[in-house]
Image (cartoon, rainbow, N blue to C red):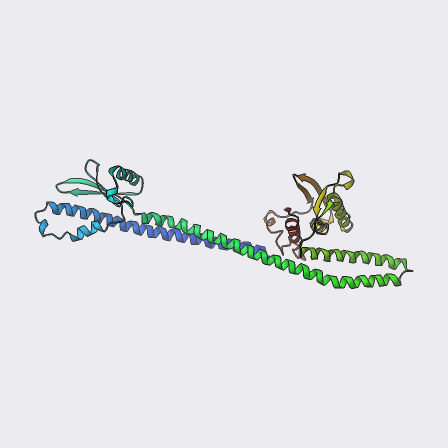
Length: 378
């Protein structure tokens, strides 16, 4: 199992844990809200009973001998539950805690609007019988605390999501910067390490050519060796350019593409067919590129296409066209292709479907195209 498959599994594990946290949070908040609603229902019942007892004591001849402190305290301590008392005709008689304004600042129109809103909401209704047999109705709804508590999970999830998003962006930027430094260091060190043996080999090649001037066969082999060393020089040059900002120069895109086709076709199986646009059949298409790095990208793409051919047989096609200020190159092959589930990971460092692959070719290609040429590869 590669690192990106494990990473995908960890994302699912974290997502599952996040869903469980959300469900637990919602259930616990709902539990607290229900307990508070039950408590406020009891407080509303006590409030209605206190009003009934006060009315009864006012008409009772023994009222002077009764302690009204408890009932008055119950009524006065209701500072959160909105209540409206309606008489038998349905008119508003008393009200408390309708909104944040004082009772003196409100008129009946405001209270009536509040009553209409309460009726549309989760409203409680308590019938109170005042002496002598006067039926009144107490309308109440739950306090704003319950409403805020019901909104709390959404607020909590928003804050957690924002924290995770900012944290993810921050860590991603830091990780990307660290990866860039690793790439730069690796590229510079590779170019440096290649430079010394290449210089030595070039010296030995020239020495061998000098002592084999009369041997045409050896001269031909040394020329091929010199060509391979030149190729190594190009590789070292590419790595050195990865470690710094490369210079761009105007190049005929068709000529550059044809040069890569010729190079790869000589190294591809004979049954692999290349269908590329011929430079002589098109007007020069001038682009501003770094030729060695662009060649590296094309070689990576063509090598991957050749490796995907089954039994070393197939066809590689290249199409060039323009979209506004951009020059587009489509490379397709008749190989086995890339599974849709791999699209997001093929450009990741270390990802490879080959048993001996390093998983750096497409990653470097993406860096060359997008960071150095301000293009897009997909």
